[in-house]
Length: 318
Image (cartoon, rainbow, N blue to C red):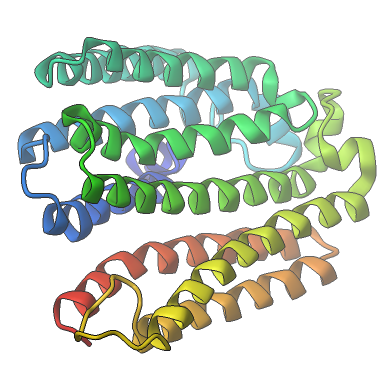
């Protein structure tokens, strides 16, 4: 394993690419189609992406720095085995300083300096999470999910809310909030599943995770509750889709996400939810929980792909 490949694994490049994909999709397949004058130019949007990715990458690094002992027990160690921890610490500091500076510059660019606090908060939260909160019952899991929600909502805050909301823009922001909540709940589910997957290492550092305190069986029940609730939220949207499809209008209208093909798409997502519910219920081994984590990533990606899909179907009256 060469150093570049190892470093990309350290910063969880797949997760960073997924987050970037979410933001790019919302910007270029949703906001730019329905907002007449979005605030962020292509250049400023690029700054938002870079700042977010740098801070998140730093968060993954500091997490592994504090988790050396745990990762060694779980056979997932990278630092000191493939990369020198002394240099990685300096990279962590550089990524955070650069990320905060770029984010603050962007906040001043759009004349809302207080938005720079978002990047400072995210950086500090990831450090506190890695140092202490991840070992506390559920708090760390919720914090990570919340930060994912914030990272996605930022595109709405910077690109729409900065000019204030019109009625149409408020609807767009609500849709972004819906998708951010979807990503946050999937992330919370994955974090809890990871607690079960890493239980041996967490026991060694005397962490207080759900899996340690309540056992694998009860932790699976909590994870199932979260994923079923998420599926119910999608079911609520499907009710909206079904209502639109079956309502008679005086004129021929098209509603974003409110057509038969869009409904079929959400049915596909619900099938994947059924699969992950069954997998979670039957999971026993570390490999089982690793598979569940992978499926949850697939669900998130397919969920986000619904944005350009619904936009295309809406614009083409499909």
